[in-house]
Each structure stands twice: as C-alpha cells, then as structure tokens.
Image (tube, rainbow, N blue to C red; front, side, top):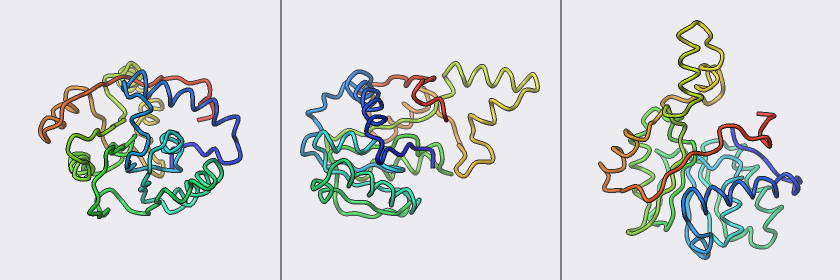
Length: 212
C-alpha cells in the first residue's frame, strides 16, 4: 500500500498536515469548514492518512480499502489521534467495485486509487454513484501531463527504463494500470454530468517524502 502511516509519529503528521491544508484550501479551493459535520467516503483510503486530516476538521468518514492490513492500520491511526471521536467513523474492507451502501455522501474522495484499477471509468462511475445531489467528488490521479512523466518517457525511448517503470510502479504490489491527462479526465467527468470545480498539481518532489 503506497500511503503513509503516522501512528505514534505526531511530529511527522504535523508536517504533513501543512501539505494537506495546502491541497484542500489552496489547490481545491475548499474551505475546511465545509467538512464540518459532513458525510465523507474515501475509496482507496489506504492507511487513512489523507482521511484523518478531514476527520479532524469535522467530517464523518467512511474509509474503504480492499487491503485488510491497511484498514487495520487506519483504525489504529484514527484511535491514536481522535481518541473518543474514533467511534464516529467506519472502516470497511472492500474494493470500489464490490462496495455496497444505500447511503449517499456529501463528499466522495478517491486519491490515487483509480489508476490502480482495471477499469478506471467504471471505478469513477461507482464512486460517483454514492454522491448526494450537489455534492463534491475529489479525485487525485497521476497525470501524463506532468514534466516527470514526459522526461521519463523521453529517457525510456533512449533505453533508460528505470524511471518510467517506477512511475508505473512496475513489479510492485499495486502497479499503475493507467495514466490520465487533464483532457481525458474532464471528458470522463462530463460523460457523468460532472464539471470541474477546481484542479491543480501536487508537488512532484517533497522533502518530507524523500524516503519513498
């Protein structure tokens, strides 16, 4: 599982919280007060590091991941940081495709998961089906528009495949099966009657992430 794990590492989490706040308030233009007392579901939640930040800002979270160990860690993470408020949140072992619920959510989030599925279009359709009317869906996906992807593709054509293979997470537990770009991602949104509220690019290089 590619996500971080902060349990018992409060100093590390405090550094990452600055990144999360930047992503949601600056890139996505979502005031954090919007998450207070809202219902949020996170598909491909991993070990819960992204979701925890939203829970701390008042969201009632449902974390869905097909990796049992990741869900166990996310429970431990929420217990450690949220204490009694831990009971407000749900943790479910399931793939995006197999998840079932009658409930609809104010926010649907999937950060990085679609690119790991065999059918990202169907995965997006499934995620979107749990969104309330007027709700917001947050998608984070690797992009072929980025400079690192373009440089890696150039190097691959010269016979240097290491960087390109790393982008696709080749020979890893959960490799990337697809890469979006802004054009085809917006086409996917429009086909399902969504429009882009705000988009942006995450930092390609992060000093806090150097170990990865």
